[in-house]
Image 1 (spheres, rainbow, N blue to C red):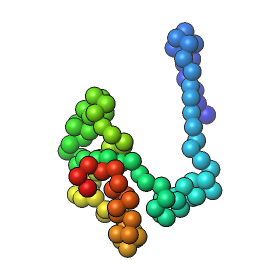
Image 2 (cartoon, rainbow, N blue to C red):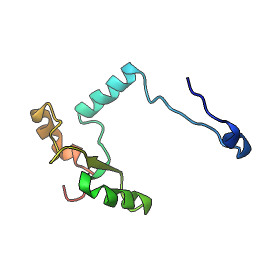
Image 3 (cartoon, one colour):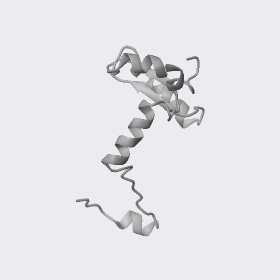
Length: 101
């Protein structure tokens, strides 16, 4: 249940937009396409948590390409991978849009 003061939206002729992305079947199918290497993530750069300011500056200046990631509590990339063999097979596709990958 969402409760809010509607005066700002009403007086400024604003609207609320939303999206639920997908149902469970659609989300599973999208993840399956990623696992098969048929969808390529557009993650162009990953920053350490200490460099979050640089990531924000790039977004603010519209100087980034694709998505930017920030590692939180992870000293290096790939620590959340549960299938190292699959990652090795798909690494060139996973990093397709990465700078310096």
